[in-house]
Length: 97
Image (cartoon, rainbow, N blue to C red; front, side, top):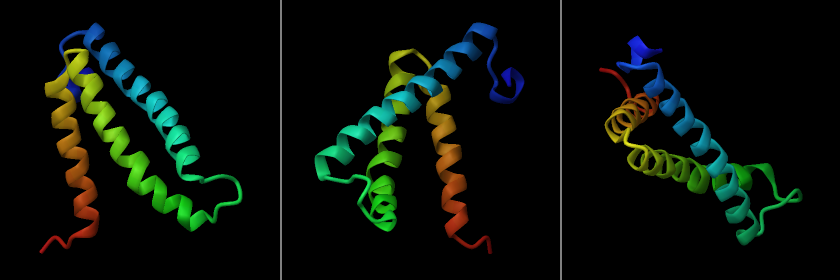
């Protein structure tokens, strides 16, 4: 992973993995707060929950990932990773002519 991501040290790799983990846990917390606030619960239809997830959870993850990357001094890596990931998602919905 160090070579693939262009990380020089094992500590840098651990820091990046830590950023991924705290971003995931923080996103779960944001999801719970947001879903409780708008009233999404076990009785909510799945289609509505999926739409809420796409509108709330996905952007929250992206923003938290950038925030934690910035705070922990890995903004350049996180920014490049975000651009690459979002470009791949965009390519799923566009034709490659």
